[in-house]
Structures are given as structure tokens and as C-alpha cells.
Image (cartoon, rainbow, N blue to C red):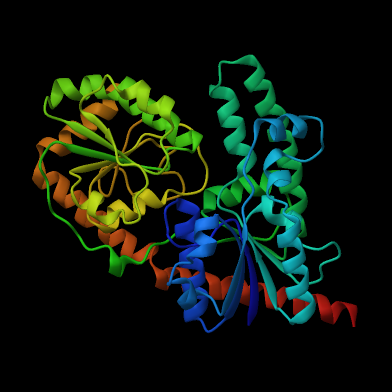
Length: 404
């Protein structure tokens, strides 16, 4: 098949979860023999120096510079009917390039990178759309609103969530298929957009590239996440302010590494009084950092979708402690392949248990690696994609027969 993928960003370098998901999707589609043309928003640097790996993932690709966000743009969006993200990411140059590609080639499908990119499709598009849902966006915004104390921000979140939900309803119902990350997201989507045709297309990783790393110094705790993303900022705050004090009592030599891009200056200042906390900043290759971890943690209180950071750590046979929300949608068993804890004191005790008991940590890491190989690898993704496309073709064939 010929597929036009309209992406929020290049899939490589894979410096964020949505990039990892998209890299896996493009790789699986290439292995299935599909021909993908990718239209992407990108930074000026990525346009000037595109990653070499793109040529192996796409038949063709082109990039348009991604617009910068602004406070004025957010303010203007308050008075409109569309959410801010949809307005910001509707880019005239990308719209023109996409329209030209659709006019020049007979594509079988458009792979649309979540709802905010929908504005880059031409009006009246007749090519079937597969909507790639990284998460249920309105759910994340509502979670943020519930956790926010500032009444103006709480009101803004409520207004944005309502706009986003309307957009998710319209776009998910209009799509031929909605590729959700998990059964959990599929259930939520069925409530938001009843009648949408959702398929579980799991977040996966290339397990061949993540070799088990048994290093264990009994003190290094790693939290992976883009530090310019609010759910990760909130998770870091929960980890450092609420969990770390108790963890220090149990493991005095503990050190915490916050591994992710673009930590804002205010977050660095907030954690500056903690000498046992460090930031990596942007990293092109995460595996060396994971290799040095004794325990990986996912202290998230806001989020949707599934966490690739858990899959990456598990593929390297690292034991993981997560909140229930942080591990949502992943079929990993508490006490066997992961520890799931929400209360901060109990979270600290779970991390300390694994730091102090190397045999327990190694056994949990090995079990997690086996589970990821079975359920969250490229072969597993290929099977799910085959089933989704077969179901879409069958439904379209039946619809055509009914009209004949």
C-alpha cells in the first residue's frame, strides 16, 4: 500500500515518546512492504540536517518548520472554537505540500499523527484516514485541571478540555480507524466518540537494540521523561519533594537522575537544593543512562496512553516502580514484572526494596524483559497492524457491496 504519514515531528532522533512510537510504526510498515511518504513538522536544525535513519523508514519525506508557541497564541485561542494546539499546528506551508501530494499520487491511506494535525488535511479529503492516537488528549488536560490550584489555569484547562473533546469526537468518528495505545485508551475513546473504529496498536520498542544491562550499584534511580512536558514535570516534583525524603532515610546514598530534554530553568532552580538530584538535559541515546540505573521509576500522576519509558527500561531488564496511572495500559503484573505504588511513602519503600535486594531486582527485570519481547516488540506491532488494515479493508468492501 501507499501511505501518506502526516507527523508532528520527525521520528528520529527518538528523543520523546511520540517519536519512538512513530519510528516503530514506520519501521513496521516498511517491513510489511508498504510505501510511506512522510510529511513532517521539524526544527530548522532537523530540516538542515535530517537524520540518516529517515531514508530507511520512509520511501520519501519532506519537512516544514514547526511554528513556535506563544502566550499570545494561547490567549487568542481562548476566544475561538478550536484548541490552541490545533491552531498552532495547522501550518499553511504543510497544508499546501500535503494537498499537492494527495493530488499527485493515489494513496491508500493517510496516517494522521493525532488530532492536532488534522488541520493540515485539505477540505474534502477522500483518502481514508488512520488516526494515530498517542493518548486521549482531553483526559490529560482534565487531569491537569484537577491538579491545578490556580483558578485561572483551572478554568483555562476546563475550556481547552471541552474543545479538545469535541475535536476528538469529530475526528475519531470520521477516521476509518483509530490506532490507540491500549485497551484502556480504547474504552475511554468509546465513551468520548461512540462509533469510532478503534484498534489497539501498542507502543513497542525494538527489543534487539535494548540489551539487558545487569549493572546495579544499589543507589542510582532514573526517571526518564521530556522535562518540558507538564506531566513529567509534575512527576519529577512528586518524586523529589514527596518520595525522595523517605527514600533517603532507607538508602542514604541514593541519587536520582532526571533524564529528559529541555528542563526549564525554574525546574532546575526548584531542585537545586537537592545535591543528590541531577538532570541530563537532552540526550540522543538513552540506553547508556538506563544501563547505569539500578531502579527506574515512573512517578506520574497525569497522563494517558502507555509509557515507552517503562518498555525501554524493562527491555534492558531494569526493575521498574510506577504509579498505577504511570503503567496504565501495559500488561505487566504487579509484584512480578513491575511494582505499582501510588502513596509516596510506599513508593519510596518499594524503590528501596529493589535497591537493597539485588536478587529481587534482577528477577523482576528478567521477567519484565520476557514480557516486553512477547507483547511489545516490532513483531507484535506488525501483527496488530495487519489485523487493523485487514479489518478496514473488509469493512470498506462490505460498505461498497451495500451501495452497489
